[in-house]
Structure formats: C-alpha cells, structure tokens
Image 1: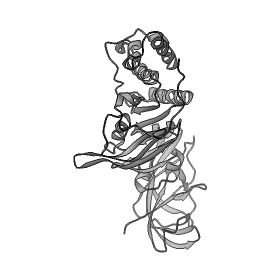
Image 2: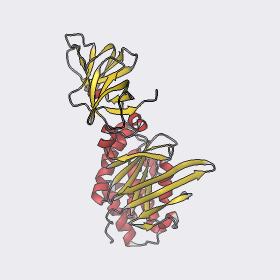
Image 3: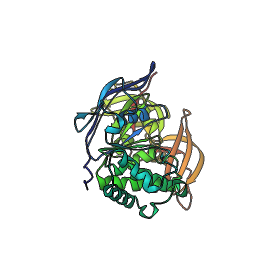
Image 4: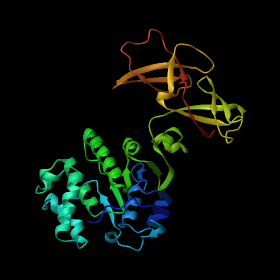
Length: 361
C-alpha cells in the first residue's frame, strides 16, 4: 500500500475570476508551504469559496496559474488533480453505507479489491469510525457524517486537502472538537490544507497562516498572531477580533515614536512609521484587553462615562463613552468583588501596542 504523501507546495499566481463584469477574485497570489494549514477568511461574497473552487478545478479562472510542487495543474479536470475536498453539507451519498461512501473516490480512480478495503479500514480508523462501516448516513450524527466525508477525502491520499466551511453546520462544542480533530489529522498526515471559513475564531485556532479577503483581494496574508496584533489595513483591523477606534492628531515626532493628542483628552506616545507626520489626523486602534480602568487622572488617561458591565465567562466587559462621544469596550478579568473606587478614567495597559491608521479629515 502506498504511503500518504508528504505535504506539497501550492502556489496561486495572480489569479483572477470574473462572473460577467463582476470580479469575484482579483489578482490573488498566495505561496503555501508543504504541510501548512492556510485559512481563507472573510465576509460572505469576498471570493474565498470561488478561489477554493478554482484550485479544485470546479471553476475556470480568467487569468493566473495554480501550481502544485511547481507544476501547473490548470489544464487538468477536477478528477485528475488529486485534490481532496470536504464540503459544508458533507455531500455523502444517502443510499450508500459509510464504507461505500469512503470507497467511492477510490473506485472512481480504478482501484479494486483488497487495496480498497485496506484504505477504507485505515482511514475509518484514522477518523475513529472503524465500527461504523455498515451504517447509512442517516444513522450518524452530524459530527460522524463530517468525519466520514473527511475519511473519503483522505482515502484517495490527496496532494492537497480543501475544506469548504466544514464545521458550519455543527454546534459550538462539536465544532471545537472537530477543529481539534482535523488539526490532529492534518499534522499526523502532513497534508497541505486550505480551509475556507467566515469564522475568525476557527481560522485563528486551526490555521498556521490566514489570508484575509475583501472584495476579491487578499488584504493580509500572515500568521494569526501577526494579523491580530499588527493588522496592515483598517479592514483587517476591524474584521479580526474586537477593537476600539479613537480619533487623534500627531502632535510631536521623535524617531520611531509619535506623540498623539487624543480627541478624548489624553496624550499618548506610540510607535509609528514615518508615514505619520506632524499634524497628521490618525485613528488609534486598541483592543479591549489593552485598556485599563483607573481612578487616577493624568496626561495619559482620559475621562470616561461608564455604562453597562457584562460578565462573560471569566471576563468582565465594560461599556463606556469618552468625552468626544467615542464608544469603548474594556475587558478585564472578572473579580469576585467590585472596586472600592470610582474608576472614571481609562488608560492603556502596560504592555499595550495600539495600531495607528491614517484618518481622512
């Protein structure tokens, strides 16, 4: 029996897809490393599923190339690309048993006899469904159906694995279990994997790198940590996680540091590139966990009007409003007793690194 291949490189080069006059994918370039999990993340209609379908061979591009290990696969039909795909609705054949569903792709490739049975047993064991061979899809839970779809995709020993929102139909706890399971299998088998999702938590937890898409283009392709901590565009900044935006102006520059006068009333010294000149209007993006409540006034603290406080698990989420009317969310660990002092000021946490963006006047 052939061993499962190691991960392959996948290169998408200046890919463009049009539906009539509309650009669904606009000049996308991605270089994906062997054995890497890459998430295509973005809102509905941003082009992520279209991009996945081009790689799979279901949609033809208007321009650009798709290469696996340096060899172009654009001329190949979908059934000759050796790419496994798991759909959101699993796409299992309802009249076939679990074993027959897993065997379908193998038989379509001309495989027969004992090798088919060996592959079925191997990959049902991999997804921990070895005792479910003779069941029909209707006799399985949603998570079990998904694992059958995954076993079917893995059984053909694909060079690339594509996952098209495979967890969307599952409840929250089962979704987390399956994310862990898929990550474990991907690491065990060394498969280069692309995951399409609009769930940022899913992308952040499963992927090695994330391509954040917007209107057919990739706005940032980076690690989850870099995308969260160092977003390159205002869209990425707002789409990933929760953030607060505050207006200000650069009042002084010194090397790589800018002094920013907030419209809310404080003065902050922040890392800034040379693009932010003296007097430049800016937006300061700061995550809720990077803010701290205080009862002590100061030049780097701004006054707030506290609003609601919501206990969410181990955290307490505070709503507040600044003197210039901006809305803030502030997150801190939930304590058993409230603070004795009125905390009507807000400051940056000690390790906070806000992001500066230019602001149109």
